[in-house]
Length: 537
Image (cartoon, rainbow, N blue to C red; front, top):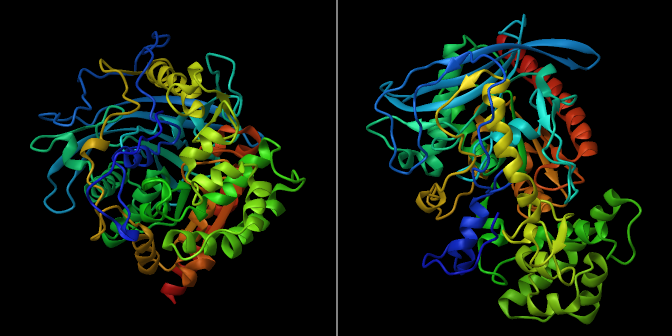
């Protein structure tokens, strides 16, 4: 993935600072792993195809199908999970999203669903997964996180075994919920239907509406209107979830839980969206401390990371942020004592803080370690400047992108029995066409949408998951954004893990995350039952 260059936008969002065109593109391409290209072949067919799709799909901005068929490959599988064997059905194919008003066909959406055999559909939860970008398919969550199979990435290794092994996933969420992975229009094998084009849905509001209508269609096709419903979005997908949650609740489709993985809920508060040194980067500071501690550059090196990051949150709030505000306003200069604290707490040299006191992640990545470039999505990965893994600007993305592309193209025919004439598109260039405006803001703020959804549904629970080594969507900024809703705080659960944007690629963190997710599902289901009983009384 390429980190953004910094040429200015002419429009000015809040804080009065100019947006950087490529910086926006870089931030807006917050995929579950990367902006990586398609890469790889589609694999050989080792099993008989359950469905050989004759349609050719396109991710081009102006592409559209003249008509669509809701057809799918359906196959049976088993998975050893939680000390037992779980039998499940995999369905890979297309559904036709239809407009909320008028029932007009909008787009043919590619999805892969995993449903437990023999379960009561009225009681069995269903979770819809999607990545972000915008312009990313959902392959990263699909084959990296909590599906029935996952790729072994060896994170945070920069020299993992290749090709990545595809293994049964001992941390799959299939023991908690049915799982449906949906690809945004233009990505994967999803495409608009005339008179619409792919780019008709490339915007915050149009995209959320399309996902609403896709979920409504899947529930209707599968008789799952009574099922407890969860959303699981990552990166830009968290903003999508905030807007989508409000759209679903307003359409009479109640949610039980929303899971936010590596959030960017308010683009206005993430300083990487703006020109360096012009906005408040306090939200990144504890992440810099976590990365410095990983490389043993802090003084001292902490023995208890959790306690250390708690101290760094307090330091950011009480010492760094007031000084940043004074610096940006031109009303005060940082003290030598504060400079020394920043050096000790992050390992970043004095020259970085003197050059860019409100330090953005772009400079931190490139100058924390002399001659090295750290990852953006996972800053624990560092490689020599000029090396092959550094060429795209983010070694943590480059090291995995082609492997995921190759894997999904083999997985569809060889495991799911779905044949296609079109290479699965892991990423398309939707960014140049995306309408990021929302509710009167030039770039979106999804916090009011999330609040509206939780107000419409007083039982709705939210789980926020973040990696402390993520320099794209920093965990502390997410916490600050959620603190804007103090009245709803009892319904938020916030968890952080060692790792980057894709915490689940780290084996220890994935196991911890699965335990937290299982607890969240049970708690959210209990809250929904209590609310239903109270409403009936």
